[in-house]
Image 1: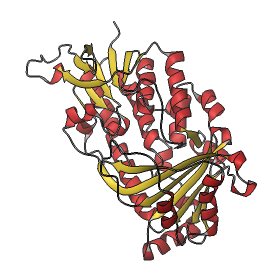
Image 2 (image 1 turned 90 degrees about the vertical axis):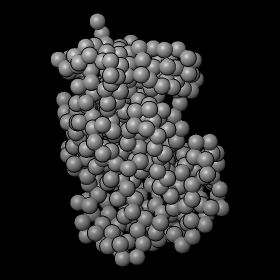
Image 3 (image 1 turned 30 degrees about the vertical axis):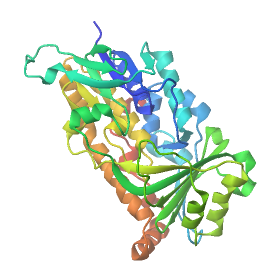
Image 4 (image 1 turned 30 degrees about the horizontal axis):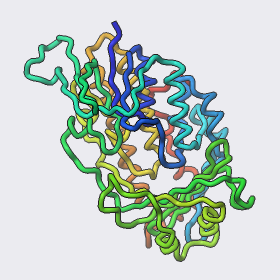
Length: 412
């Protein structure tokens, strides 16, 4: 008889986990708190390490239909507008890492994963129903070593449901994480992300883009790139500033005056790109950025019959563009672990955590470090700009990241 996995959360990580667990031969029951699946936000960058995972799941064609595939990454000074360095993507990424570098709308990424779950699996997706708590029989004093045990969850409707494993993919404010590891408030970074999405057709040709451009300046930076087959342009401007008092209930409306103040002294080219948002009839939305310290051990990702995935396990800053990517890599590794039918379930989840925690910790730490470099001032900024001018691609390429963790090697 098939084993059954319960998944808390139906976002990108939850959908990826549902697809992966089904491929491993498990029955899947997913529980999502909101009544309709949706993804807030705008664009997502997917490195070759992530695209290979999607290819291995048979989603390459679906990805090609909705994503954009930039030909290069360009870094410019936010103060002078000068190009500091470039990294070839496009065919170069395919030749170097076996897959393309893609940029995609978050809603499109979620939709293609959702479609994959519906088309290729028998997973049951329960919307408007959340997992509120769990009881893991494998960790109780009464459990018998070697005996089959279950995890019992209680839903928001008060119903108890048993499963052979529970995957917490319920995001930054994960209730699964809180019960597994104890309450730990997310870390406020002091960085604010202004996000906008606008039709490229509404822009003059000089402001349209087919590449990823990162503008680096003192205490701020902006990234822009195409999404949805290149029809839309995604802009994310991150500045340093205070976070709202209540991070769970605050409003996303952005104050344009605050943004104008942050841009004082930046280049005309950057300001033209920013002003294009209002000119195109679009607007800015604001997100305060939160994260957690890097994962410390496998116990931070799995204990007994319960495992964490994506932001529930390792929320990170966006300065390596790998938040969604690490959730998808988690799911690919979860598929391999759940397929180890000669091991009991706690050992399979332990194997998943052992194979993932160090890579996630490294990406978390590198993302934080990149943020300090992106927003550098004084001599550090001068050294950064000089390194980019002299070394260019050697500084911008990240081979250890784009080669992946081995979970999608079969797709190469």
